[in-house]
Image 1 (tube, one colour):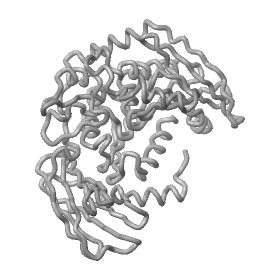
Image 2 (cartoon, helix red, strand yellow; image 1 turned 45 degrees about the vertical axis):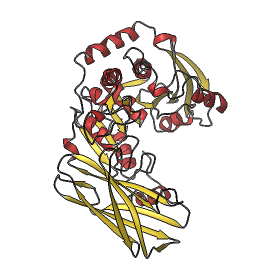
Image 3 (spheres, one colour; image 1 turned 180 degrees about the horizontal axis):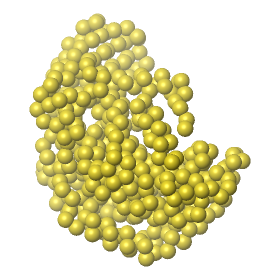
Image 4 (cartoon, helix red, strand yellow; image 1 turned 135 degrees about the vertical axis):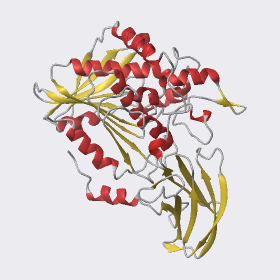
Length: 430
């Protein structure tokens, strides 16, 4: 498997500091914790260490506006922090399991200044889901899988030219519910195999897949399938996806959230199951190794696939979305993207709550018995760590959490990269 090249490794090490923000190339603001792992026991004290510089030199004296929050800054404790010779610090403690975020701003927001966010956790292994699964959760999904099984896969493959003589790539189309299609790319080494399978799932957004994403693992010997999260073809002009983003797929994640029958993620989750069935049906799969991988929205889909499909042998999910969607039912907790449950007048929408529980990753995680690798970070406010831990903590099978404490959602993750490569190698042999 590939190793991080030196420039990437340097960038990864830099990201051990907080989500470093800059207002201009000459201004930097960074936060880290006094404990490199940023994990504490309840009742202990974390010290957030702050550094502020201009033009590469420490700022002699300044004051920062800082906020502390356990619920993504819906509510926060505000403090003024003096900076002396470029350094300052904030101490804090919590008496129950949580993730505590700090946000620092200099100067005050609106003055063209700089802002950054970091975090620390108190006994995150004890964070529990905000609500139990619906009583008929398993029955509902068994019925949906049975519904899908009545629709023929009807796989269609078209060869795609790639500049790699040892790899074959195909555009794949499969049938799904509601007269929709699953679109993706299949990559494989030339020959009959059998090969270990790798199933890739996509982060949020509306875009075309790139064939190169299946070429890389195919070079390493994998039978690889990558599917679009949406029922849309790949390879169209950029304007096609931009129009969908502004049109029928605008805020797609909230579409149909009034009912479990109409929720946008119903088709998406079943597309994952359909694609897994197709990949497992191929004669060039080795029948032993089947890894499903994804990050963010793709991480959510990966866990769903591992819960629903009997073919999956291992799952890798970095910063999985759709975790603990009902977290606002508890004080001081934050749900993950896409926050399916709206709040009106301080109250959770009851219809959204009913729907969200059928699509919440914490409830799928309870049924994942294969080895699982999960990643999170404490500066991620898109798929916040408390929601990820709520799902991770109920996984019943072999599992490992990879924590990059101060990485942002889209930042470099120096611990995740080698750990996921090792996991992939481990579960593709013997």
